[in-house]
Length: 136
Image (cartoon, rainbow, N blue to C red; front, side):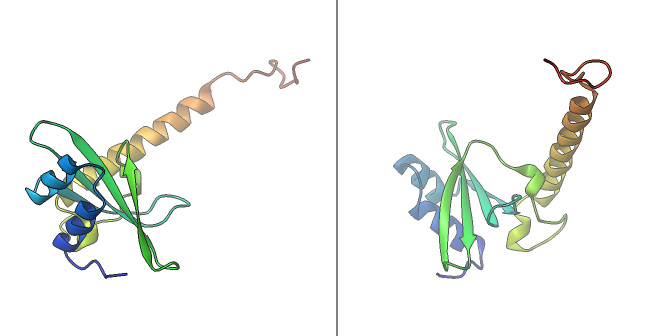
């Protein structure tokens, strides 16, 4: 397992595991944006990279770091799990990503949406009777 120390190490690994030649070409043309480090609940820590082709196609690549097995695992995502972003604003580390201010804003928005969904779910009427009785 080669250590990931720089942005170019991370993008080179993403290019090796790109889902298509178009994605690998977009990475080589420096059309990749490192979003930073993420730690999903119950999952492995990972780096997330978005790649945009010149024709508008977008890929989201997560490189999971499995330290126990001493290897990297690549996942292709449908969306960015912003609520799990681990970076900090103004940081210069790889975990902070290329645009930490935008990532921090996206994390705040994602957590706010999650909290709103929880409060709406709590206010929904239950399927039980008005006294909390079980339906027959």
